[in-house]
Image (tube, rainbow, N blue to C red; front, side, top):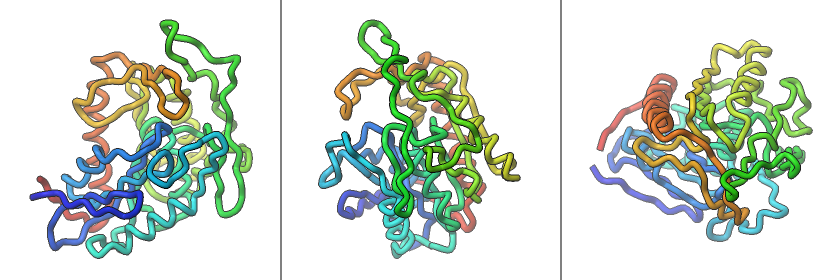
Length: 288
């Protein structure tokens, strides 16, 4: 079975080439921007019609991020487009898979839409980081980097983990907290305790606490991998302990011990597939 790639302006939907109807997933990458369909292709090989959605740093989307405001309406438009696709059954609902900043926007979208049926977040923040977010005309501010808390690793990479502080679980959303209590879908939160880019796993447990305080604790699962870093990617993909961040033009430390991180990526991928397959109604599984 081959993969068919349908181009939609700045987006790629990757799906299995059959006459069947599939559950639709939007896959969102993090703050490096651009478009990367690797994980979307793997999800498609498991029977999901997957839209790899770019939202800055690609084609005619904003490249200058100095004054960027992320608008949830953009993500809603993508969700509506995907659910109207002729080989996506909207009755199955929508799935969201995101990492880091992509996980942040996945949670914002899930908080607004009742047709979101499942959410998987890798290294999710508890609040808006780096960019303000426009939620239905209301600008929710972000927590900015505190320069005095930046550490330097190996005289090269910036360790930003201490620059973003978790916020009270009941903080007003206008101050930047993501309103996860409005999410009705099951959520899987995956993170590494060796993350040097964000305050993981504390963010995940704060999200879980908020859900629990609103009677939704049972629908939020947290998995913490000891010594794993920030980018818990697809299986057998090499760990990236530091990266030259294309948007900020500096090296950023992501952390992660090689063996522990490799195990985390294998296990996280298995848990992701199991979680999606368990929580999507009407799923038809297809394998390449």
